[in-house]
Structures are given as C-alpha cells and as structure tokens.
Length: 130
Image (cartoon, rainbow, N blue to C red; front, side, top):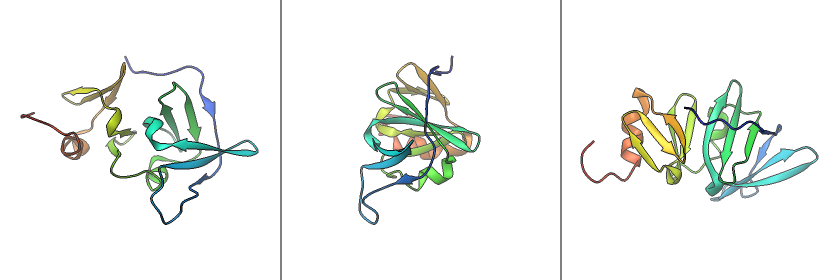
C-alpha cells in the first residue's frame, strides 16, 4: 500500500532561501501573503505531482509546491537528499529500511528505479552485501 494522506496543504509560488550563496538548512515558501520556513531536516520525501511536487513532512503535514522535482532539487542539500525514482526524492536520513527496489519511511513505501538504484545504495551506509 502506498502511503497517501488525505488533507494536503496547498502552497504555490516561489521558493526562497535567505542564505543565497551560503549553506542553508531551510528555505522559505510563499503561502498566501506570507512566507513559511521549511527546515530540510523535517522533509521526509518529495513526490512528483505532474508539474508540481508534494513535500511529505515529519509532522504528517504535506505541502504542494508549484515546482517540478528538477526545480526543487537545486534548493536541497545534496548530502541529505537523493533521487530514487523519476517521481521521488528522499531525505536519506529518514529511510528506516529497504528491501529489493523499495525504501520504507515509516509505513510508506517508496520505489527505487533501476536507473537510480546504484546511487541510492552508495548513499545508504551499508554494512554487508546486498
């Protein structure tokens, strides 16, 4: 069973990092008339939704952004996030387990595509053979 929550919070607009040119551990997302701070450590995974992407957060909150996965990737720290599928990016620190071509974050299953599997396995601190 794929994990989907039923009440997403819809967010549109630009993504802004206030530390441009420096290492930032958050960005700001325009939500209505104000900007909401999103800490990267609270993003568990990101799923493509057509030309949008949905952020799944630690606190069971979802944010729908008007950016595709390629656009949002440029704002994410590469040491913490990895593309695992054409439709998914995960926070590597949120992965609880994996088997075959499937990652588990909590009760949710995230597929690993064949084209991304080697990079994902390199990023998971594996002890032993796969």
